[in-house]
Image 1: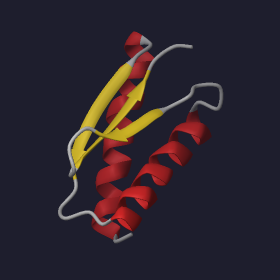
Image 2 (image 1 turned 30 degrees about the vertical axis):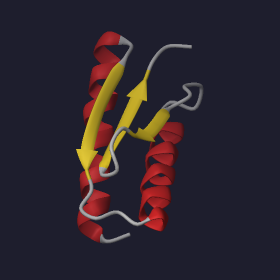
Image 3 (image 1 turned 135 degrees about the horizontal axis):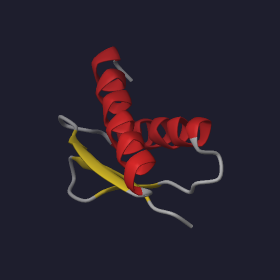
Image 4 (image 1 turned 60 degrees about the vertical axis):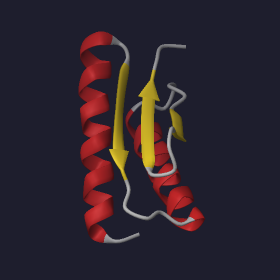
Length: 77
């Protein structure tokens, strides 16, 4: 995964973390330019790892809502 994508994913996760900290729920999306299946998996895995490192007891919901739009959602269990 290239550095620009990593920075964008980290920013996305930080937005969701801020929302989750304030409201106990969070959701944000990012558009990935021309994602291959491998890039989609790498991006999803990266977001899951970020969430698990910050909130180990929270199950992240990560998925593509359109072919290019990756969404991260955090909700209380």
